[in-house]
Image (cartoon, rainbow, N blue to C red; front, side):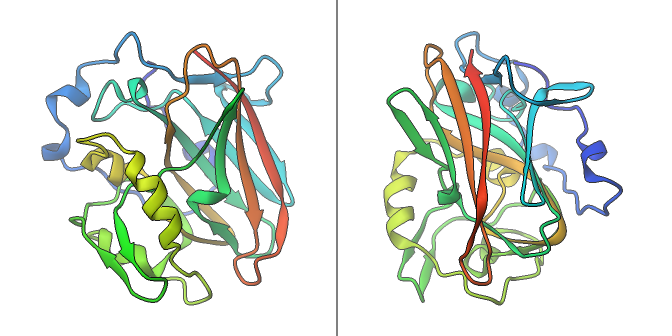
Length: 248
């Protein structure tokens, strides 16, 4: 697995980011030992649009929104994550002039006969109006600018985020379905810290971190990362971004 230490600062376009570091105590020995030779990760498809000097990053722009994704960036705990889960690092830039909804169900990874929505890294239960929190807060390790966290996610972080005050109801059916797909011992604290939470990316905002999907098999062939773009204020569709990869 390629090291995930290369900086994404060039993508920010001079924006001021909030950045976090994972405490040393959270980096287990297994997380720095190197990658399993059987781990399945994603690389750009032959005709994918990539960034200059960053040929592992697939990029597309729709309706003023840019999505960049790297399917081979994971370097934390566990080191063999690709054996059981497909981690994808994403960078979002919103220049649409409208607030962009960031929900796990808006992201999908598809291959022949396979579809996975993004897996929520936190176990939330309860109802739309009264979600119940059952995980220990973590120190965040993703980067953002002009990002407002979903209200029900704020208790999961040891950080005072700005909360989105518009419509953003908790989806108990989604969480009860997709959180159960995690294997025992996952997600780790590193995965939670580096994963992006649900929320809203305001105009001129930036967001960078990981999404996690069910495992893609090495023999899956062409793989597509899809992001449905939705106006957070009124639920109106703004378009769809599709990024082409292949499993390796």
